[in-house]
Image (cartoon, rainbow, N blue to C red):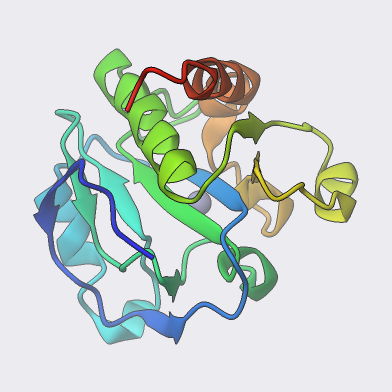
Amino acid sequence: MSNSPLVVYTKLSPNHSGKRTMAIDRISPHCVVGQLSVESLGEIFVPVEREASSNYGIGADGRVAMYVEECNRSWCTSSNANDQRAVTIECASDSAEPYAFTDVVYNRLIDLCEDICRRNGKTRLLWLEDKDRTLAYEPAADEMILTVHRWFWNKSCPGDWMYARMGDLAQKVTARLADGGQK
Ligand SMILES: [Zn+2]
């Protein structure tokens, strides 16, 4: 298991459960609720009492950070079952609904999801939209599925802006993965 080569800033958080008990077959994008830098987001994940972290973060300028190594289970989605399987990504966003991301952040999210799929041997990223259908779905060995925080906790995350683009994200990443020439 490896970490993303897109990472340019690392500040490891103590808030995680150690090694995953499940193989990675999900990606969960989140909204930060603030146009924060990767450094500021990293500071949020330092205090143990906050009991929060994510594997990766994308700052308002599009830089990618790592807070919990990909091999470890982050504390991000209010769901042990999800976080054991999911790579979690906090994305800088506006601080009010619809919690929009800037283009640079959204495009970086596409890059990061592509990288995560490639390194984990996945050739398709799926958005099934419906919570029950998604949680019941058994992905094939080469499939990755998108999940969202709002399915596991009473909050908007990843926000209506990103929620409306989950299908677009899945489609764009899968199109890139289909291009065998790309590395
Ligand atoms: Zn969230």
